[in-house]
Length: 92
Image 1 (cartoon, helix red, strand yellow):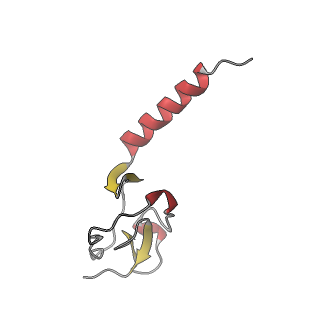
Image 2 (cartoon, rainbow, N blue to C red):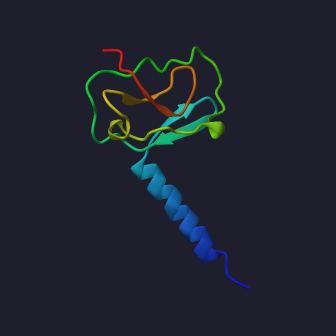
């Protein structure tokens, strides 16, 4: 029978790594974590206000993690009124 200690140690280290390496924000009742954007394109993302709605972030999927993954002049933004990152046209 294998010991659970190595598995638990790996899990704890993984959580610590994610906490340090990712920028986490509260989305509804769940934390939403994303990698910091390294290379930014010009313009600003649309407002991320959700109007007080509760969002189930466990069902969120990301289309991008940085502006570099978006074609043309699109930016990687958190979707307004939703969650998850998507390539969007900048507002400015």
